[in-house]
Image (cartoon, rainbow, N blue to C red; front, side, top):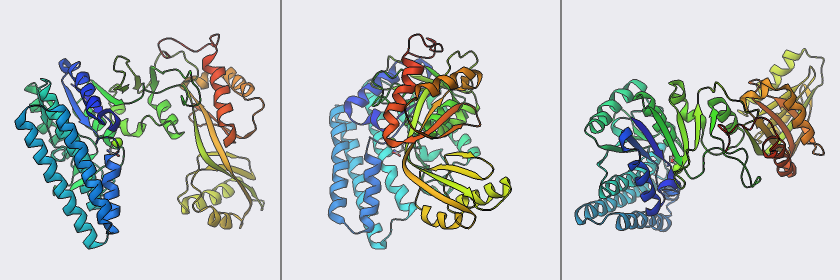
Length: 463
Ligand code: ASP
Ligand code: MG
């Protein structure tokens, strides 16, 4: 059994959905369970309806609801030709649109969109897309059956960020999904949505479909999990900066985590943790280019002879420099500094310290002014914004002492504000001026990936 998850852009219109069906068809012998997201943009529209309703902006709400309704009716028209299912689906879409209007009215009367209401609204995106996709599969002679994820994705009642209750989910997922699989059907279900034990609709957080797929895949012991999106997996750099960025065939979970933390946008690795823990291979694949195998993310890579895997960057960084104004012992100083970070719930992205000074790179500056006042009790503070973190990620950086020299020389001429070698030793990061992101990323990429003489570009890892 395998799990295939298709994100919003992979199901955004009828031609995208037809591609999805072909992809699923090509995997039928492996008994796929299909998770889908809402069509691209719909979740945002539904949440906008929540906000507009609270402000009693009825006109705009009505427009949005009819936009959503029309878009899905169009999908039905383009994908379904048999009269009976077509009428059934259109009827359902009308019912859902009516329910959306009722929900919106309820919110308007209450004057507040509670999280319960937000989840109820947001869930319609996946409910609509999955219902149409399941039927479109039937139309293309794939035996498919729609399964409502709220039957099995039982969560706590932390609406908008609900947490699955594992033992219940596992039991219910087996009961809901195994019988259709055994009977030769493809279960089509929704990512992102769930329900409390009292069957009130919940969602597990924005972008949560990957997590739905990975969690269920791990509980059902899937042979493989495929996350289908609209890019060829993970690249060696942002292709808008590096035109000849290369595709990475394999990477480890730690590398993927590090990359996403530093701004690579392909997937949030924590969402696939349940699969990684069970050693289930996860592929990130492109539904527009299904013949390409994508990036395989595994727990660990045994014989990987690459040196660096990828270069990532994070913009809008502010560097906060603190010099102790007292003769504190180092641990006192650091403790005081981080107490302030903790109090203001501000994340320190990269840190460099000496006994009396510390530099911290942050991206959330909401509370920086208050924080500075607190720091001034024990330190001299200065901060500079308009910075960025550029970093090189790769498990094997630690085994290649020579690489640090190459990385540094390639950045010759670029002003570096701070350097950090991550504790995991799989990333080397630099704080540079935002204007230097492009030259820095290009220089690093040239050095590490574009030079054909460069060692560490094994064919099994890079395309
Ligand atoms: N549709 C949801 C979102 O846009 C969940 C997902 O796509 O993963 O956040
Ligand atoms: Mg989405």
